[in-house]
Length: 312
Ligand SMILES: O=C(O)CCC(=O)C(=O)O
Ligand SMILES: [Fe+2]
Image (cartoon, rainbow, N blue to C red; front, side, top):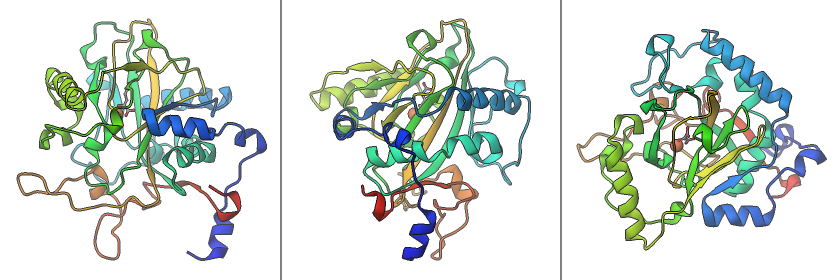
């Protein structure tokens, strides 16, 4: 990339937005604990726009469709009924949702937390927990996101969990296992690359306990109490999950998975000899040497680049 391009691409924040970035202390807290509760990064208008756009999305509105259906696509449709809804690639299929999620400020916060110069979207999954207290599909068992991203080379990837309203414990908010991103993992096998919905819940609870014991660590569960417009970030190795929605209102959110500029497809062999894959692999363009390109702007747009002028 030439200097001219860096200057052209330079994204700037207003002074008000700069004040919303994590402080050095908060970046250090993220490095130690593996999670960060942000300041108010989206205005009420932006969140209200997301709610309206998601209503239209659930009614079937799309600006484009994926050209092919990837093997592990999460894609709720009305025929699936009142279960927890997960819809991948909402940033690609819906222009309003995509535009709001690409807000540079969100990328700038992620860049500081990950200590990266560039942040791209990796995936955006819209999530809806129906207000049914006993709905079993509403429970998100313990997992960490890197398990699904074995074909990604980066260890810095992170997720922004963005509720569309105040989100507390009664809604089944996302809950972090404090500091677990620093644990050494034991007992991982190929089954961890399967989505948590397809896995045995007791096995996941047990895996968490075993990993904590192996690391001589206590399991400290921290529910993220997130005011409207704020969001919680977690490192790709931080264990997290969430419980029932007993609030009487739907819990609506987007899980915005982010990658740093250096992330790329890597060969990751599984025990049966096949290679770990991600849904992108059947969608994105190829790099010059034939690998899936996780920088394809069609699916993985850049939302932040730190230029020399802006400093780290
Ligand atoms: O919906 C939740 O509570 C958890 C979402 C999640 O696993 C994530 O954002 O990575
Ligand atoms: Fe997750």
